[in-house]
Image 1 (cartoon, rainbow, N blue to C red):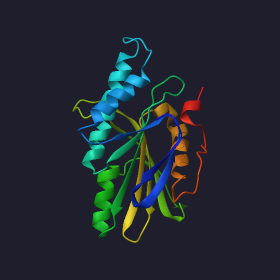
Image 2: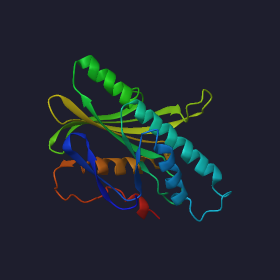
Image 3: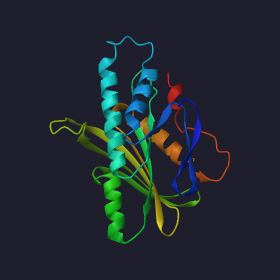
Length: 216
């Protein structure tokens, strides 16, 4: 979990994930045990009553995010689990392959995976991994949980839609609700996306801002 890793994405693509991130399965048969082991390691040596509310919130958020990812057909979620400046961070990455059918199918598929197009701040076309891509950044007030009375908090989304073939899009969907560090985490998200590659090219992690576990 703690080391820099190269992970596989659909279509033979790979990403370099920095230290401090964990990869969790969305399979309901294993995800709860994975979350428990992860949080046990993360909070090892901490007095039980000292960060109990933080742990409860982290458990709730991870279960919610994994359940939502499973509903969208995503099999894995990458989550930042190491704290920054001793604060727990909410930051996740979903990677999915989307079939390019009719225009309506593409629009519906992206809306289901990425959510509503509210609070869009940036849209740009670029080249990623040697192929055409579109990057979108948005910031919007969204419920903090599934409960009807859950308060709304700011979420920052950074989404990449990459044309990996005539028939397929590779979608990278980053999101954080740690609003105080949203700009810094956007740099981290963009740095991860920039490592997208095929084959064994030996790319290394070169963060635009900082590797999460190196923050003071």
